[in-house]
Image (cartoon, rainbow, N blue to C red; front, side, top):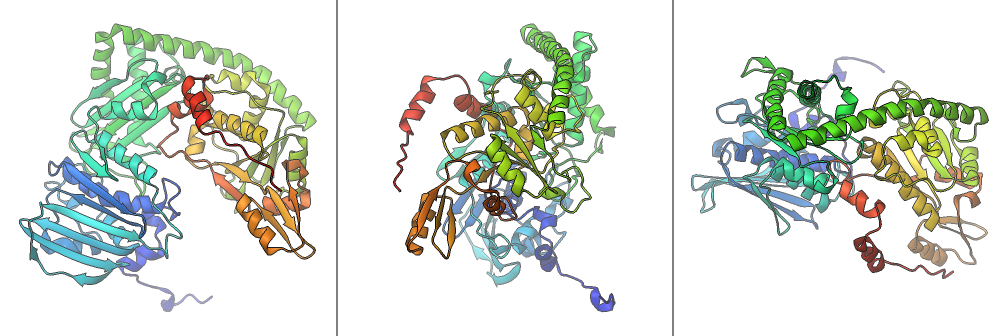
Length: 616
């Protein structure tokens, strides 16, 4: 193709955002996942309101959702946007109050882009500023100004109102999930103890801040000792150890959740190791200190540097206002506050020491078990009984199909045989389970090396993985798909394997690598057509549409022929993403369903018991 002057285009702000929305909001999505773009739009709006509160203006924020239209609105009671600059602030790129440190300090908004992206990517966008007894309103359609209302007197309290409907040209079949919005609002409440938020008739307010966050996410009953709360003007740190080996981190910068961590989290983890070594006067292995650590960190700094517009990872290395590195600032904070706490609370210090010593003992035991596990894996490879690998792996980042790499975890030889014969050997691998795996909830990493089935599965998942903690291994396959029968036994096996991932690889689940394969329950066919039905409703429709039909009920994956399976694991295969609605998995949730039997769980089962009838 010709590359001439005509090939060069200049886009205005609105066209650029709509042409390249991924630069501003990540993936579009339909609202089923917490990182879908419609929630980034909501975040950009409410972040401005929270920044107002942080600057000392407004202690209430109201959020409303209209499910029918998909419209969401945010009303704060801050200073309100200066009335003559309302249009510029929502439609003129690189314009805003966050460039003026005297007006906004240590805010998450930096580049004057976020609210413009919301405007450009919304089919309907309304902004109204109330300030000094006057109101200014503007209506937009996909970033284009539709109506500019004149200044009007008002009795409304000062503040800002913004409503928007995500554009269905960008966000196909979207819908806001109230549970995801509620989790977001709780985070704002945990980070701002003086702030009250309202949504759906509920109030969101936290008095203990990050301690409440850890109680909600982990559960105080799942911690080895009460959370240690350390705080200064610009840094809050709450930590404990949970009753399992997984590490859980909840880092924030200027109220922004940074799930990928960054320089602040790395500095805190390194500093914790140094402080504990100094206090106990022993050179503990870093893994022994951090195994089971649960930590929430909230940092406030001026002009933070993030690695993208979505602000999921901090890149700042220095604190300009203090002239020191970020690592030095966090180390000094922990050396003073954590060291003082340990001296003032000997019982807690002893509990932490016992946990570190227990981790040390377990790590050394695992080193011995690894030798046995390596021999077991070598024998498994020789007999080729478990893993039928593919040619491309997720770690082959430069390969054009690396994102298609999939490991199917199946039950039994018949199901694995059908998938193996019908798979795409380039990107599809198959691992065959033998019987029901162990319920690993509450067990330590030792079980991964002691249990033959889990050890072989771990090896299949990350053959080339190296590291001290299981969850830090990179995934070998982009998609890990549980392919079990749609009967009671299959569901049980699915839950046991899901517990394995939530126990030892929670970050893989949070990152969207784990799926469940949907396979048809019925086949309805006549001489001319064949319909595969995944639900009772689909079966009923197929029966009505196909005269003189016959119905086959698939009792297990092994009954589906390889030729048929090709249609179920190809490009159009139906996958259910296993995602946690909270920032990480909820230990209370796992404890209820996979822990020891309790009267509460027995009552839950009795109340939700469902009897299915074979009616065909």
